[in-house]
Image (cartoon, rainbow, N blue to C red; front, side):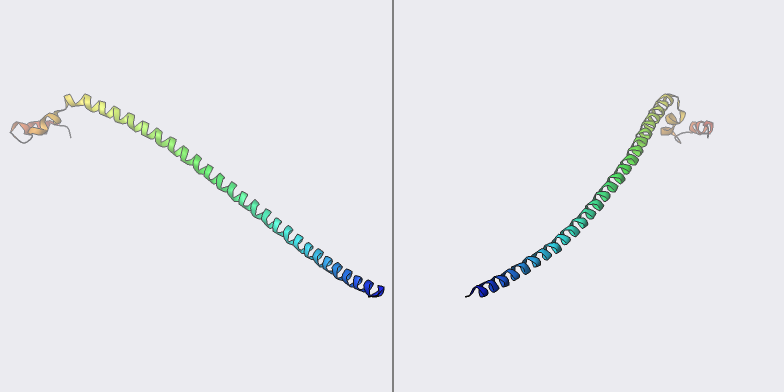
Length: 123
């Protein structure tokens, strides 16, 4: 091989390698663009996910507040009803010894005197 042949071969190889290098660089640019695009899409998706999570947490907090308030109201109502039950039970116990109906009910209708008792009861 002459020097010309060697230099021609070298130029061919050099041209081929520069072509390959350019091809790799352009491919690298496409990869970079793809990576950047994918990163941006991922960033947007992550932000949407965080926003959804925040919204869900806010909704749960509001529901908790509402249920907590309802629970407090129901506890107050239970307390009020328990106190009322105690008052009514005490009133009934105080009334039992004086109650004519309670003493007469088991013997009602067994004799003529019970008719007078029934007619004297308040309606």
